[in-house]
Amino acid sequence: MIIVLASILLVSCGTGDRDETKANWRTGTQAIEMSFLQGTPPTVLYDGDVFDIAVEIWNRGASPLVGDLYLTGFDDSIFSGITKRPLPISVEQHKTKYNTEGGYQLIRESGRILMPEGSDTFSTTIKAVACYFYETMSDVQVCVDPEPNKRDLSSDACQVRDVSVSGGQAAPVAVTNVKVESTPQKTIFRITIKNVGKGTVLDQAVVDECLDSDVVFADTNWVDLDSVRLGLDDFLQCEPPNPVKMSGGTATVACTADRIVGTSAYSSVLTVVLTYGYREDIEQKVQLRSTI
Image 1 (cartoon, rainbow, N blue to C red):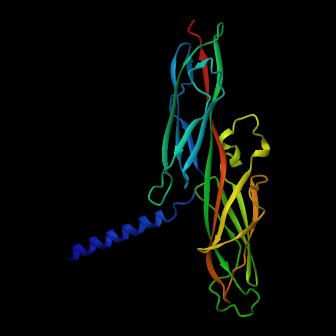
Image 2 (cartoon, rainbow, N blue to C red; image 1 turned 135 degrees about the vertical axis):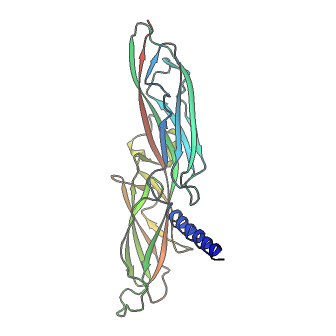
């Protein structure tokens, strides 16, 4: 009986530790993680060589990954058979409480080297550019006070204060700060949004044509504020309207909750949902050599 009881206690303790780890899964600043599969392409290629370009793609964030991959930086008459058309990215599996690694996709293209006549060596840089749609969901615990001017604060369960958010939200765009301004029966949340990833935020309207010459700097740094909710069902009105322009990789929106009731302060959750386009790239240097 003692042995059985001890075993039950050990199992219970182990389960508790695992649940605590899983509770913190929605962190990090990555969505896509890319790399060229080792040796694809090789760093040195000879005239007539058949070769592969293979890009490994992981979805390290908390949203499905959908978009396109472009291979650029090479002359397709020399790298014969390698397309410059968009190659679909689709990784529905993403980071969850029970899957902290996310999903995976391998994109592979095969070609043949045709060296220009009279060339002994030739060098280029092959780039893989990913343009995709993504979503950020941020849950921030805030304190709401329906009557901030009351004298007696002893019955309040919390104190109104600004909230700094660190660690990211398993996405390259994150909520980093929420300033809380309480007035009688109304609370204003000033939400700071920041590009915390390594790439460029894109207007969703240009994601499908992200490498076209018509896509310019003015099409970057736009994010859509899909919703801001206080508690379960209080959807807030926010300014400025969508899409929100980020300056220097940062934007601030002001959202007003005007259905605040009661007399004492209480804790609630502010849920912010953002959608946007994003662009990232990797590169590999390649040298071509003549066989003559």
